[in-house]
Structure formats: C-alpha cells, structure tokens
Image (tube, rainbow, N blue to C red; front, side, top):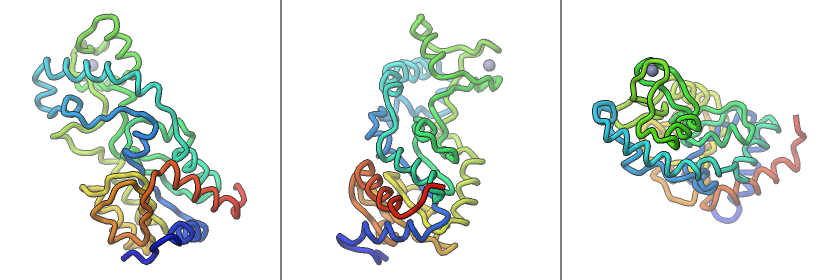
Length: 254
Ligand SMILES: [Zn+2]
C-alpha cells in the first residue's frame, strides 16, 4: 500500500512527521556501516552459544576476531543520520528509538530513549557470576597476552557481550519495551534496518494496529516495502538529515 509515490514522497513524509506527536524509529546496520563500524555478521563472531561455552578454541577464535576489529569500533563516530535522530528528539517528536545496532552510537550521539534490542558489544559479562567489564578493559588485557579473557571475580573464562548468539533468545525486556512503544506511536519510521526477520518483521504490523503510518528509508528493498505507506530508497545519512531539516524549519525547539 504505497500511498506516497514518486518524487513527492519526501515532502509527504515531512508533512507526516510534522503532524506526528509520537514517532518510534527503528534503525539498523546501514547506519553502522556508514559510520565505519565493522561487520559483526561473520560466523567467527556468531558462534552457537553451546559451542562457545564448551569449546575454549571457539572462544579464543571469537576474541581474536574481536581484538582485530576493535580499533574500527573505537574509531566509529555518529554520522549525520544519528545526528538527525537527535534533532528529532530535541524537537519533541521522537518517543523512542529502537535499534538493531550494537555499537552504542545513538547513545554517543546524545539520544536519551534508546532501546537496543540486540544489546551492545561495548561491555562484556561473565556468564558464570554476572560481573560486567567494559570491552576496552578486556581488549587491553588481551593485548598484554591473554588469549581468552578471564573473570577477575570467579576466575572462569566464559565472558561475552550481552548480544544474543545463535541458540540464545533476544533480550526479553527490550523486545517488550519495543512492543509497548509501537502500540502507542502515530508514525513508525524504519531507517536502514533489516525488517525481514522476526521479531522485527512484526513491528510494522503492531504499529499499524494503532493507526500509525509506516515509513521506510533504506538503500535496500525489503519484504515489507509494499506494506509501508511510504518507502524512500536512499542513504539514511543523506535522506534523514534532509527530512529532519525540513521538519525543523517549521517546528520550534522544545
Ligand atoms: Zn565471573
């Protein structure tokens, strides 16, 4: 149901955002990659949880790879799409920012209401006793020669970021929070996210039950493009700042 088509689509979305009071945004990998965040989809970084727990070599392999890509993660900074979403919050339009990204860049940009449904790689938890460590401390320990990080509290070496590996459920609280927000929103804006797989593919359906419009901004096609009210194909870093600038020109900062 693409009711907004052609070159007027951007102007139509600007009007919808102006009319909206409670926007929920879902962001994803396209924002990360435009900030130079390394690709976290490699099999080395997604071992099955039971193999990770039982096989020290799988853990060593995981941490070798993490150490390798860590400098890229540290170098990544918020891009114009992140900054546009902060502006959307500052003008009082953004109710909640749900993200599939795991790089913490929305927090870094300054957004306050961020729900990380896949959690974050910036901290690491001991799966035995629950003690948390910043990722940079773990990487520093590895640079001193540690092959597999160990917990200072209990001595076990099964530490991992709280992101879900295959075989693990997604974080319960975050998904529940996303559903609650989606049920209350009047516009659901999907930006550079992958919405073809569950549970995220149900998000537009939940939002529409409340009468919300669905807008997708992405470089890629998705299975839900026909379901959306408007789809803008383009780079989030170019499209979103343009749209938010147009909205902001006619909306005072709250
Ligand atoms: Zn421990």
